[in-house]
Image 1 (spheres, rainbow, N blue to C red):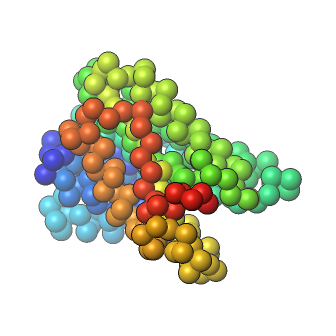
Image 2: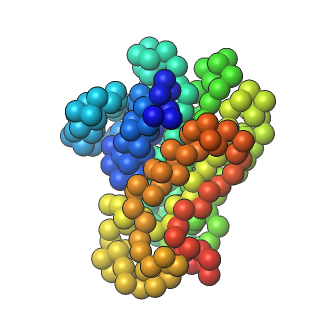
Image 3: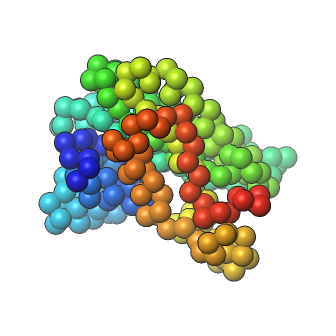
Length: 250
């Protein structure tokens, strides 16, 4: 129970990696609020399942790309629990396509959701974390930020931006005992990667050193560590969790 007494807020928390992060933080004793956009049934089930294990959690429906909705969600958490100690910016979407034919909305939707939401929530929790002189911020990036994939200029740009934001913010708030780190997943078994897995899972595994795809829990475990006191001297770091996928490039 290394996070007992802490309050966490996770964006994109009802499914996939986000759901695993919510479960991991709750398992370590944190009270967890999470943001979801449309998966109300999944959100309600997650809260109910955690309640069966005597874990406190609640879901908030909001558009993470909307600053006013982000601020309102943060206010709800503060009204309920009085603090936010841990922020995990996990919300993300893909709108893949070659840049030459990419529609403006495909670019702006990905940038605003993936990168813009990090600004919205980091900015929103700064006052409470700085006044308390404590905070753990973990942003979910991707190995795509470092290694180019055709058709993912918007996604890679958003995730590269997250890494830059992480490093710069870490220098701004470290003196207030707030750490800011990122986790860069490799190929993880989620709904988002299902189409690629169905087409080329065997070939993908051959390029991963440990010869398996990652599970959401692999990312959640890394986040749980970075949120803990054991990681108090780590900040501005991007932790790659990819099973060795990028050792030879992707």
